[in-house]
Length: 357
Image 1 (spheres, rainbow, N blue to C red):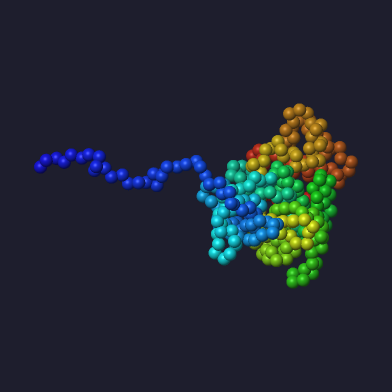
Image 2 (cartoon, rainbow, N blue to C red):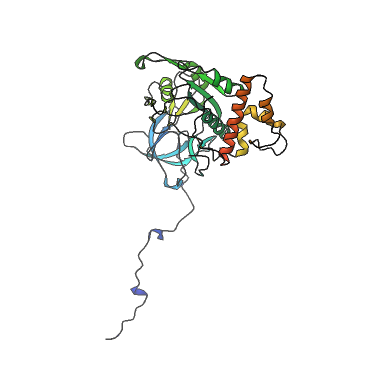
């Protein structure tokens, strides 16, 4: 039999997914509307379209494909296209993320290279700490202060459960170094509980966007429910054996605080067990300790301020304390800073280890 000869007419090319020519041109979305991201839940974003404007309304959005893996977080200002009416079943699309004034990040620990963006465009970090049940952890407070300083945010220490313990020690430790401190205490049964000091908290938040961070069980959600009565954030309890709270808030959410002079927002975040600082330059850590930064100006050139640094002015500052109480407080401050520094450099123990004042 004669052998058949093939030519180009016998070739069949099956078009693939990449057969369409790509272009670097992207839609301008000139008709996009501005919105504020208030919550994130499984790939869907709760947004407030035209925030504080005449046509303010809530809507649900998804992230546009062209944004790739860029993360959208509560506090972000974004541009929306599509159905932004907020009607049932409507879905808009986030096509742009606005420039962020501040970004609060954390890592799982001090060696984890993966940064987790928590909140964008917040003015201050509110470190919610219980004075008892569970016990306060000063190392956690110091870490949060360092993270706030690195993010360009102010730090506010909110001490709860003052009806169970005296706040004097913690107030005396942080107020002198520029960290604003507010104290609350509860009175009455759960059904008719009164929170004293709430007006001081509201005044510290007035006109600002604040993100609340703290361990589970410290009263963070209770504080949010008191500030925003219709928030209905779940409130947990503290385990009597472990001394730790149970996670109740599962996602970060931005809430508008009523009865304030200016536009005021709080962003409630899930309780955390640790606050890694792998993203913070070790040379910047001292800036979070205003009192130590001033003392360190007397250190010799090249001083690392670590435990084995010769002629470090921090050691002289502790030794020159006028009394035992002041010496103990100064020593605690220096120890906290040096532990942060060592942890950031990978030479310390687990950063989740608790510490008491």
